Length: 85
Image 1 (cartoon, helix red, strand yellow):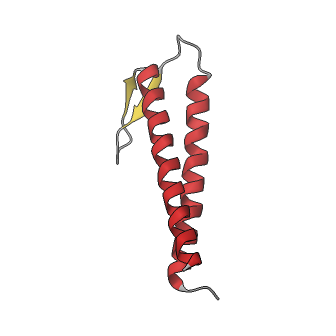
Image 2 (cartoon, rainbow, N blue to C red):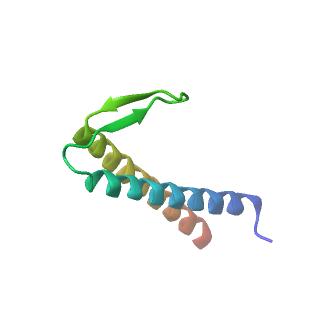
């Protein structure tokens, strides 16, 4: 049975992979929307939605995806470094 620290890292990597998959779907959906479609964003910790600019929302989602990919890569690299030691 692997040590607890390794299992936690594995869970974090899986969690990042799921978040990246979800974010890719969001970016794809926003990219394929017709220009005249409306986009609404949910307020954090609320059931309230507000009208948002489609291109701005798409840009924010792409940035979030890039940040997730970077963090995921850093986590994987740190795990590989620990395994080598």
